[in-house]
Image (cartoon, rainbow, N blue to C red; front, top):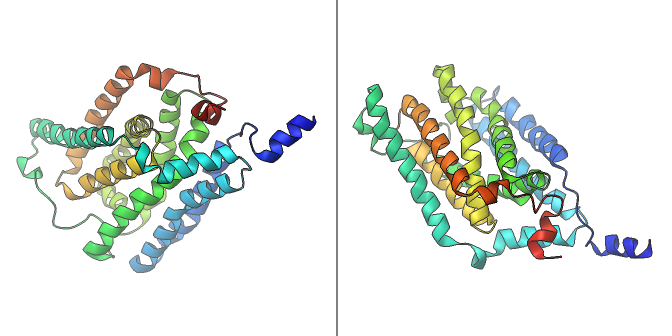
Length: 287
């Protein structure tokens, strides 16, 4: 008993992740700002959106700081500032892969009557009210801030209880649904999809296979948050600035799903191993 108490005191006892509580709080502290944003002016709404965007990162950081686990704190520190551990070649191939997804999607869309003119940059961003510089800043901040929350605690909190295949499926669905209030906030990318509900449905479906790809980026990059930030930023930029039509983005979801399936098949051990279940941090650091 004394040994057990001493172990707990030093913070080396196995940490028990709390994914349900994390998502409940992340959703709560995001949506209490995003839902009111639908009923105010675009400028005030933009501020509320930014505050809500911070929620997953703040909740993630608080969970780690109050965890009492030295390993969990060490893990977050390494994932945030351990630049020497980033496998940059893998990050490069991941970014190149998504560029290939966009190219293939546009080419396939020609079959459905779309135009080659989609191989161009749009003049503006899809959301309004903050200007071009502000829009670029929002896209950048979204990529950076979100990944601190999702990779700082969230994905590991699910993966600690199951293999990475099921974790990717669950995370992709929950991450996608997290964006729901944005459909009703004027000037957002998601609100622009409401011209046709099928476009909005496609947006939420696309988040699921993308969840597999970004989990792969996370794992092959030695669980680097920076690698995921770079990939997320590139995806957001391509979705915003490449002149793909909403119809082509539906085709893109099919291509993303195929690529995600290929990644899973080619990395079966990564996605289906269970050696880490129940001892994620201990397996990671050999303790």
